[in-house]
Amino acid sequence: MGNEALAMELVQDTMSNVWQKSRLFNADKGAPSTWIFTIARNIRFDMLRKQRNRKEDICADDLWPILCEQTADVNEVALDDQVILQELGQLFDELPQKQRVVIEAIYIEGKSQQEVADQLSIPLGTVKSRTRLALQRLKEMLKDND
Image (cartoon, rainbow, N blue to C red; front, top):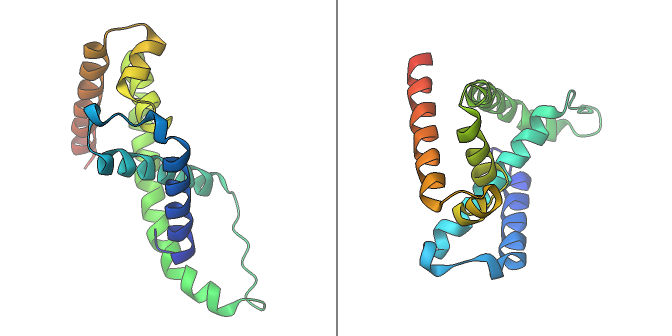
């Protein structure tokens, strides 16, 4: 993340979500660590989206010169991340609608595959295959863009 405060916020938000959503965890579907890492990844995506949507980041050199020096290097890395995320977002829009809906629900909204199957009234196997196909397609599109 590049910034200790943001990293701490990510950890705090993750643990808060784990605590609040603990009743949703199902050991039959996977290990607790996988579930926790998924929550952390989704929160990180949310943080990146918020960061990307900020048009202007104001930094008062006269008030916080040290902070501004530290964030200069971080901003270079963040810019690379933003370019990658923007490219991924464009590729995401090229996915077929049915695959895009499933990926959005699982990876952005943080829903389980079973929840997505119930929400869309489709079999769990269909959700799994759409997820796999969408991820394969995104991987191929990323390779083609390199």
